[in-house]
Length: 176
Image (cartoon, rainbow, N blue to C red):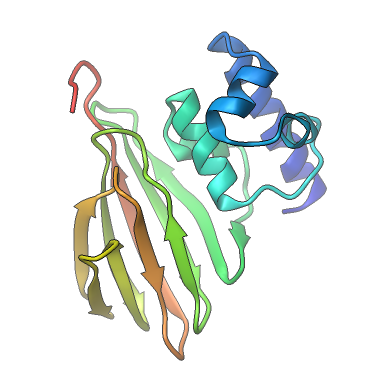
């Protein structure tokens, strides 16, 4: 992530944290992130992982897209790049992402917010995706929908995979 994007993410993260009444220490502890790392991130420094950003979004009770919406570059690590394509304003909230996974990549994703459902459509390549222990092998044009409030995986073999990922969040006012 470039410096401008890091600074934008940091300012946005801090404003969400303050608006929700979290202290730096409280959010860091709840998200399982070192306080010093969260502080650096809010100052526009560091190199946040996708998991760190997801954990912060879950603790702030916002869709991942809300946290990365101001960033115009892909967010990524270890062979996985993710870019927010669009974010709905309806109820339920829906985020759409473009994702690219390098060959021989396994990404273990943590649970999303309660009630979240994820749909993955493979645009090119092949991918194993889904809830750990109940994943599916997909080829271009195939889709899989699963409960994203459980840990899940994305795994490629010897070629790149490009995906469209849609996350439908729990309707406001409903409990899972």
